[in-house]
Length: 373
Image (cartoon, rainbow, N blue to C red; front, side, top):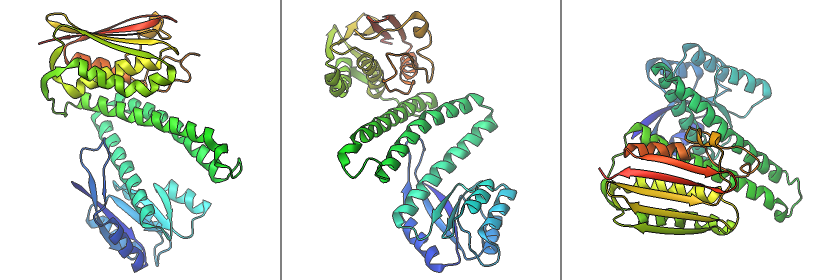
């Protein structure tokens, strides 16, 4: 476990000791981080003491009070900015103002936290700062390595996450201000839309995790004889609630020896993407057919639906990252635009191929061929 060094700069000993107590035994972890973080707290009662600490040791996060004897917090922040220290600064103050916010932001402050704060507020703030710092350092590392494609990837990712966050924040503010009155039922639509947005974000995060595992090559592959129809059934069970909503009937069939030497988790990713797309892009009262067949030296997986289908132009680009077919029929369907690119990468890891046959308004068939060797 890595340890982040937190410098708390405040002239009130009670605040400093409170931070030490709250962050003791507190850890932060995210799926995209290789390891969790815990925290070691360093104390400074003045701005001058803080600068001494910063000059002699590495600090990751600074919790900086603005009202300090001698140098104030903004002056410390200006020094940190001038020295270009690799850290994140969170201002803590009872005297927040627009002018202070502008000055602090211009000098690189990540955010504000008002005093007094609760243990929960401090932990939530530290968790956000840790994530921000991790992503900032990873971005810098990518820049040094010259991987500009990663910056484009992060730009698209930021957009994909920003839109639903803005929507949920807007709905919460409307509810907080009770714009529709005191009756909770009046806010049902907002709640449903917020939940839908959060579900889309969760799906995007899961897709990103799948993509990361594939590209990093760090996941240990556990190859064993895997029952593919059983994996397919799990994927279908997962999509069953959504299929019921659309009255989509799913069927599974297999022929011959349909076990394959494979990683069960990777096969689950393949089937999850095939089945979820077949249900999501289907029509109400439609069907999804999953067929797995022993073709001697290879296994054939065929998933067909009676959905909205695609044009030839759409088929040519559906396996690219963040590509979603956007038209009148798909505007209400959520997705990250990563599922099929992940599917293709996963199939190619097994030296397999994937083919698509589709016709607008009649449906699509995805055919995956995976060699036994």
